[in-house]
Image 1: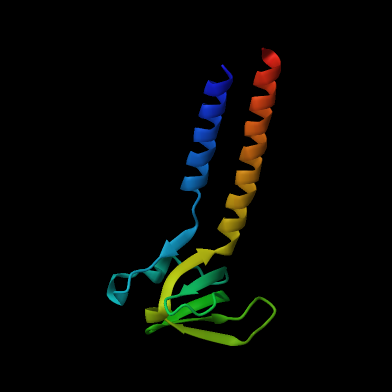
Image 2: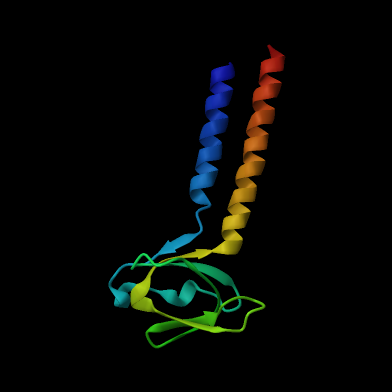
Amino acid sequence: MKASVLLKSSLLTSLFVITSCATTKYSEDISKNNYSNLEAGKVYKITMRDGSPKQKILFRNVVGDNIVGTAGKKDSTEVVIPKANVAAVKDSRKARIAVGATVIGAAGVAALIISSSRAD
Protein backbone atom coordinates (compact mmCIF):
# COMPACT_ATOMS: atom_id res chain seq x y z
CA MET A 1 0.00 0.00 0.00
CA LYS A 2 2.78 2.43 0.92
CA ALA A 3 4.61 2.00 -2.38
CA SER A 4 1.53 2.57 -4.51
CA VAL A 5 0.59 5.79 -2.68
CA LEU A 6 4.18 7.01 -2.85
CA LEU A 7 4.44 6.13 -6.54
CA LYS A 8 1.14 7.78 -7.46
CA SER A 9 1.87 10.93 -5.52
CA SER A 10 5.41 11.28 -6.91
CA LEU A 11 4.17 10.75 -10.48
CA LEU A 12 1.47 13.35 -9.98
CA THR A 13 3.94 15.83 -8.51
CA SER A 14 6.49 15.30 -11.30
CA LEU A 15 3.77 15.71 -13.94
CA PHE A 16 2.73 18.99 -12.34
CA VAL A 17 6.32 20.27 -12.22
CA ILE A 18 6.97 19.37 -15.87
CA THR A 19 3.80 21.08 -17.10
CA SER A 20 4.51 24.30 -15.20
CA CYS A 21 7.69 25.17 -17.12
CA ALA A 22 7.90 28.89 -17.84
CA THR A 23 10.80 29.20 -20.27
CA THR A 24 10.40 30.01 -23.97
CA LYS A 25 13.36 28.92 -26.09
CA TYR A 26 14.16 30.53 -29.43
CA SER A 27 15.87 29.05 -32.48
CA GLU A 28 18.83 30.58 -34.28
CA ASP A 29 16.63 31.40 -37.28
CA ILE A 30 15.18 34.77 -36.27
CA SER A 31 12.35 34.59 -38.82
CA LYS A 32 10.89 31.51 -37.06
CA ASN A 33 10.83 33.13 -33.62
CA ASN A 34 7.63 34.65 -32.32
CA TYR A 35 8.14 37.36 -29.73
CA SER A 36 4.42 38.19 -29.52
CA ASN A 37 4.09 36.14 -26.32
CA LEU A 38 6.22 38.72 -24.45
CA GLU A 39 4.00 41.17 -22.58
CA ALA A 40 4.92 44.80 -21.98
CA GLY A 41 5.42 45.66 -18.33
CA LYS A 42 6.54 42.18 -17.26
CA VAL A 43 10.01 41.24 -16.00
CA TYR A 44 11.84 38.61 -18.06
CA LYS A 45 15.21 36.93 -17.61
CA ILE A 46 16.93 36.62 -20.99
CA THR A 47 19.57 33.96 -21.65
CA MET A 48 22.10 34.93 -24.32
CA ARG A 49 23.53 32.68 -27.04
CA ASP A 50 27.09 33.92 -26.61
CA GLY A 51 27.31 32.75 -23.00
CA SER A 52 27.26 36.24 -21.49
CA PRO A 53 25.41 36.62 -18.18
CA LYS A 54 21.62 36.45 -18.14
CA GLN A 55 19.92 39.84 -18.24
CA LYS A 56 16.83 40.73 -16.28
CA ILE A 57 14.71 43.31 -18.08
CA LEU A 58 11.34 44.95 -17.77
CA PHE A 59 10.08 44.31 -21.31
CA ARG A 60 8.73 47.30 -23.22
CA ASN A 61 8.47 46.31 -26.91
CA VAL A 62 10.17 44.83 -29.98
CA VAL A 63 11.65 47.37 -32.39
CA GLY A 64 12.93 45.89 -35.65
CA ASP A 65 15.52 43.24 -34.76
CA ASN A 66 15.88 44.34 -31.12
CA ILE A 67 14.12 43.67 -27.85
CA VAL A 68 13.77 46.90 -25.89
CA GLY A 69 13.18 47.27 -22.18
CA THR A 70 14.53 48.80 -19.01
CA ALA A 71 16.98 47.38 -16.49
CA GLY A 72 14.24 47.01 -13.87
CA LYS A 73 11.10 48.52 -12.38
CA LYS A 74 13.09 51.09 -10.43
CA ASP A 75 16.03 51.47 -12.84
CA SER A 76 15.02 53.31 -16.02
CA THR A 77 18.24 52.54 -17.92
CA GLU A 78 17.24 51.43 -21.42
CA VAL A 79 18.35 47.95 -22.45
CA VAL A 80 18.47 46.93 -26.13
CA ILE A 81 19.11 43.26 -26.92
CA PRO A 82 19.44 41.97 -30.50
CA LYS A 83 17.00 39.12 -31.26
CA ALA A 84 19.85 37.15 -32.83
CA ASN A 85 21.57 37.00 -29.43
CA VAL A 86 18.54 35.63 -27.52
CA ALA A 87 18.56 31.90 -26.70
CA ALA A 88 15.72 31.77 -24.15
CA VAL A 89 13.35 34.04 -22.26
CA LYS A 90 12.07 33.13 -18.82
CA ASP A 91 9.07 34.78 -17.18
CA SER A 92 10.21 35.47 -13.60
CA ARG A 93 6.67 35.58 -12.22
CA LYS A 94 5.68 32.20 -13.65
CA ALA A 95 8.92 30.68 -12.40
CA ARG A 96 8.17 31.85 -8.84
CA ILE A 97 4.64 30.44 -9.10
CA ALA A 98 6.04 27.11 -10.32
CA VAL A 99 8.49 26.95 -7.41
CA GLY A 100 5.71 27.76 -4.95
CA ALA A 101 3.45 25.14 -6.49
CA THR A 102 6.26 22.57 -6.28
CA VAL A 103 6.75 23.30 -2.59
CA ILE A 104 3.00 22.99 -1.96
CA GLY A 105 2.91 19.76 -3.98
CA ALA A 106 5.83 18.33 -2.01
CA ALA A 107 4.05 19.20 1.24
CA GLY A 108 0.94 17.44 -0.06
CA VAL A 109 2.95 14.34 -0.98
CA ALA A 110 4.56 14.33 2.46
CA ALA A 111 1.13 14.58 4.08
CA LEU A 112 -0.14 11.65 1.98
CA ILE A 113 2.87 9.52 2.88
CA ILE A 114 2.58 10.29 6.59
CA SER A 115 -1.17 9.63 6.66
CA SER A 116 -0.79 6.35 4.72
CA SER A 117 1.98 5.15 7.03
CA ARG A 118 -0.18 5.80 10.09
CA ALA A 119 -3.17 4.00 8.57
CA ASP A 120 -1.38 0.63 8.64
